[in-house]
Structures are given as C-alpha cells and as structure tokens.
Length: 297
Image (cartoon, rainbow, N blue to C red):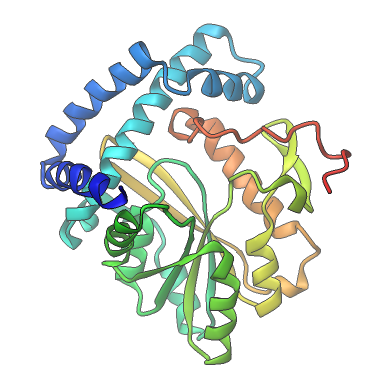
C-alpha cells in the first residue's frame, strides 16, 4: 500500500516542483481559498492560538492575521515542494543571511555548533544556504515519515545541500559519535514545538502563556560545550527571505540553566509580535497549558 500511494502521489509532487515560482504561488492562492473558505483547515486551532497570544487585539485584527497566516502556511508548503528541484542559484537569489560571518567565525574556531530555528517564515532554506556557505558537516534532527518511499526522497531532497538527517531518537547518539571522532559539525534543531508532556522539565511563559519548553538543544550544548546560535528567519516578500544570526552563547557551560533557552524564546517572541502572520499557528503550541502541576507519570 505504501508503494501504491507513493507512485500515485510522487509524480504530482515532482511535476509541481519543476514549475516556476509564479505558477506555484498562483496554485498556492487556489489551495488557500479551498483550505480556508471551504474546508476550514485548522481554522479553530489558529484562532485559539492567536487569541491566547494577542488578547489585546480586536477580533478584526486577529481575523486579518489569521487569513494571512493560513496563506503563508500554504506558501511555505508549496515552497518546500519546490525544494525537490531547487538549485543553488535559486537558494542564493531567494535567501540572504545578514551576518553569515558569525557562523564562519565559529567554524574557524574548530568547534561544532548547535543551531536553533523556529517555525517562522521559511525555516528550511536558510539552513541549506548556510551549509552551502561554510565548510562544515551538517546534521538535522527530524521526525521519521511512516511511508518509507517518501522518507527516502525527502531525505535526499533535504540532504542535497549538505545536511544529514537523523531521526530525533538517534540524534544524541550521532552527536556523541561525531564528538568522539573529533568531527566538527553544525547540528540543527527546530525548538518551538510542544514537548511530550511526561518529559517536560522546564516551563515558562511563551507569548503570555505558561507552557513546557524544549530544552534539548541547551542540554546538548552544555554536555559537549558547543556554541549556540539562533537563526532568525523573516519574509522579505513572497518567495524571498532573510536570515539574521544570533549567537546566544559561545560558552554554554558558564551560563545558568535555561538561560540559553530563555534567550531564544525572547528573540522568537519579539519576532512573532513584529510579524505574527509568518508564524506557524496551525500547530497546537499551547496544548499542555495548565498541566504544569499535574501528575504526568
């Protein structure tokens, strides 16, 4: 069954990936209309998240953000499909990194780097460009896809610019192996998801709501004494993005627990408040709110 689904769907994905951006964005407009006005895809989730995050805004303001957010969500999806046939030239034209020299400087120091990203704007292309720009091995943590055929082609697509994808459950083992072999690398995490409740160790405010926060990147940085960087991704215009590098720390073992994580959350919050329509509101970021003191065993 997995193979049948693959051979039916993959030709469509491949065909879409060879289309020019202008056509893809036109199709995105159509998909947006169907998802938002006909299907109502995740509309309740987006509306709930926005009301929690911006209680000071009027319903009219929230509705405007909601529509823009769903539209951007669809744009991001079709742009990810485009990655299958995206060239280095396309990446260089559509992504700019404001201060790539910060990464280059850390790489010259011969230490591996922990990179934290978030679901804001386009979170995949900047990593591709970064790995293209610096001479360093790249590893990214990801959730395994059930269909083994799609798993293979998606890994190939995401790896063509230098990233090695490793299933999240095996990521720490990969870092340890590389460290034992003195292999310098860049390790990428998307750190604004909601962690599994029973594993939540740290709670703090995010957009005014107390929730569990992922601390894995900070723990890895302290364990191996790796610098930590946040890459802030913002949209310039449709299909074009810019990235700013924030060095959160070069000496993680010298900082109090959770300070690195708090720095990341603080920058992300400012980023979201400035351009809320480019955040990934369709996921249930606040689903564990109110459960901090409950027995989760």
